[in-house]
Length: 361
Image (cartoon, rainbow, N blue to C red; front, side, top):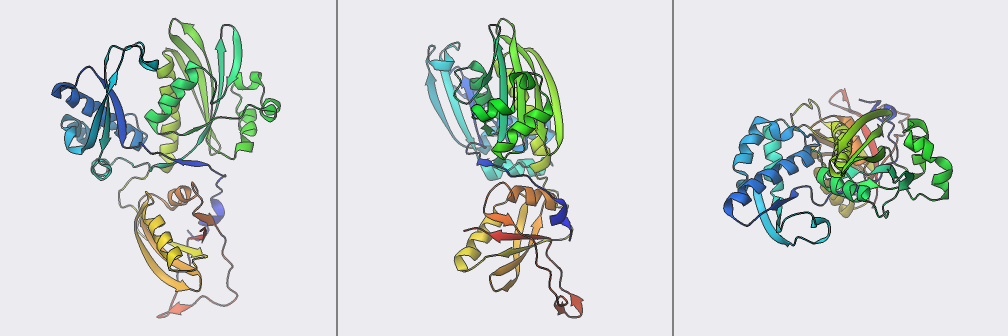
C-alpha cells in the first residue's frame, strides 16, 4: 500500500455528472393502472442497468422480486402526451411518455442487498469517433452532424449513463486520423489522435446500411491500455448504439463500480495538504463522504494545513483513487519524506499515509 501512489498512473480524465441516473422513460398506451405498473417495472430495470453498468443485473433474483412491486421504490412520476407526428415519435402510435424517478437510497439498498455494484453519478467522458457510410460515401460524424447515428448514440448515452465527448473534426483531427484509419478501426492511430482531448476511454465505430432500416458495423473500445472489439450486424440503429455503449458501460463499470461487500480490512489513510481553514476542512469531509467507495471518514491528525484521515471503504484503494481523479477537488501529491524518524506513539511507529493529495478550493 505504501507504494500505491507510485504504481497507479492515471491519465487525465474529463468527467461529467449524470443528472438522471435514477430516472427512466417508458412509452405507455394510456394512464391506466396496469400500464403504469408494467412501465414502473421496465423503468426500474433501466435504472438498475444504468446504475450498475450490468445488462444482466435485472435478472438477479432479488431485483426480479422488486420489479414485481416497483411502486414502493418510486419517488415521483409524470405523464407527457405523445402526438403521432411529433419529432422522433413520428412512427409511434399516440400515447404517453411516463417519466419515472426512483428513490436513490432505496435503489442503492436493493443493489447492496443483492450483491450488485454501484457505479456513481460522476463518470468519465468517453471520446467517440464515428465513421458512417451512407449512399456510397463515408464521413466522420461530430456532435452537430444531422444524422440518425448521432441521435441514436445520444439516446443510448442517456440509457446507459455514459457521457460522450465528440472530436472537433478540425484540421488537426484530419491530419491526425484519416478516414481509412478510422474505418479500419486501427487502435494505435485512433488512440494517438485522441491524445489532444485528454481522455482515456475512447470508442470508435464504423456503421453502414445493411438493409431496410437495418445497419451493421464494428466498434472498438480502448481503455487503460486494453482494446475491446465487437461486430454488430443487421440491427436497427437504436440497437446498434445501445450495444456499442453497453460494451463501454460494462468495461467502465468493471473498473469504477463499487461492490459494498465490506471487503476492506484496514482503513485507507489519506494525507491532504492545503486545508487552510474550517471551510476547507468541512468541504473536504463533505466531499470524501459523498464518494461512492467511501463508507465513513475519520479525521486522525491535523498539523498546520495538513490533515490526515482514515477512510473505511468498499472496493479497492485503486477505485477510490480513480473516483477522486474524475474531478478536480483533490489533486495527486507526492510526499516529502522526513529526514528524521517518524513520530512514535506508545512505542509503535505512526502509520504512513497510503495516498497523498492537495485540496483545491
